[in-house]
Image (cartoon, rainbow over all chains, first blue to last red; front, side, top):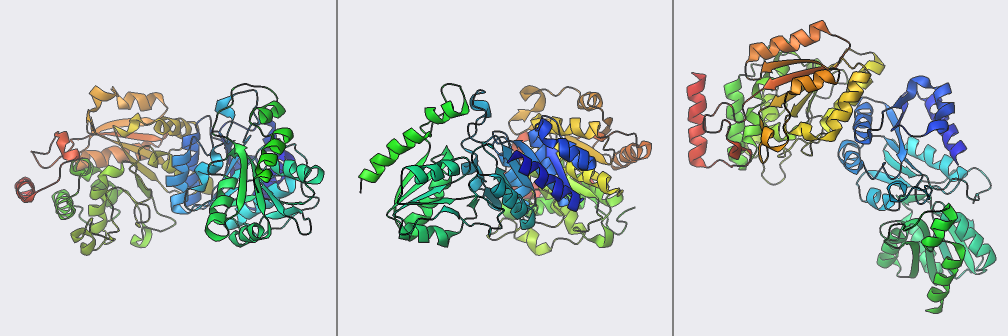
Length: 305
Length: 273
């Protein structure tokens, strides 16, 4: 996914000299290709994220197309007010990349872990929120963000999980992407980011009656498609490496509650910070997001009906 | 002169502020009065708006980062013909476009401010854009002395100096007060000029109510045009122009009544004779 990101920004910048990459002194080797290909379009704004986002607004006002890169713990969380007032309020076309979302920085603790970013970004008017699961989704999200000419937050989580698509995509913005379609399925997984591959693996091994959708677009989201999925399934399980408050699960539950009330289990981070550090897999386990913990939660949920 | 047909006569600008503050029962009169001369000089002699168009892509930028002084900018924009008398008479009426703090949706207002420390960084971005596009556009950002408590100001100062944005000028309205009292009692700034000089700015201090001195200082900074961003530290008086408001921080919050409105107008009339 990181290679796809690097080539996406290089392509955008080569084709449009107005594209500028701003980083808050993060990225390191990730930007080697960009700096070689488009050195004039690369700006290291220093460890000064608030100023970086305000500047991005000023650059966009003057016709540039800034891509603002940071760790998702900082962009959007630390700079939420700058995104709201300086960028989103003025409908400015700035793309925000929040890298390392979820528990990628599993050894570094709470400051670098990010499980509230979708919730915070979702509520800002004029700001879209994308959450790609693999390289194909990332490429499609970058293209959609650039073409939208508006403010977009793209969440990049764990980048080396199994791919969920086998070929390049050209989705309509907002579409949920079916990654496993089972005829007459009664259970629907809707997952985003790193946990899309988990959902697919669970459906393939444990839940033969399940279909699986990956949701690279949290906002906007294709409401009619969500309603159809809710109508066609007895039970819905959402999966995300993000708080169960305000993220994908909340989005699905909000739509369902108004249009097609469904039995929904939201699996995600349950309103807590990490206690310990360890490997990424360990952190998923601590938060009950490893396969066996998910299966336990699902068994309790499925038994309710 | 950039806008020779417009007078930006400062007693009239203050009267406009009083009229709208009285009409809307608005606060922040003192914040507006301290920047009247600064804005008058900028609009009269330094800001270029091709075809008098506040949205011109070639315009210079005046960014009011201290949005609390927005009534002073409204008054200038009235002189430019960008706002109707109706907008002033109905200030704060339901469905009023003009708000109590700067809103970028009003042509002529570049940023949505009020949350402090934002306009400075946006201005740095616009100045960087002008450099990248090789235009001769200038960016003036008006900040309050209280406002520079905010961290992004100093982040942006580092960036502007490092990137030699000499098309960027910060003007500090150093009126010595912030919302809850004197700046020196809350977070003492000591010498603002020295602070910005040490950050790599070309800085000058000036009497912020002396129009000739302000004009000369801005011209000096523009003409010597070092490879540095510019800082003009304008020493001002909060509430300037109405004696009972001057250096009285209550006029950050106090609303006019019929009596205080008449007294304030009388003081202005006396002053302008």
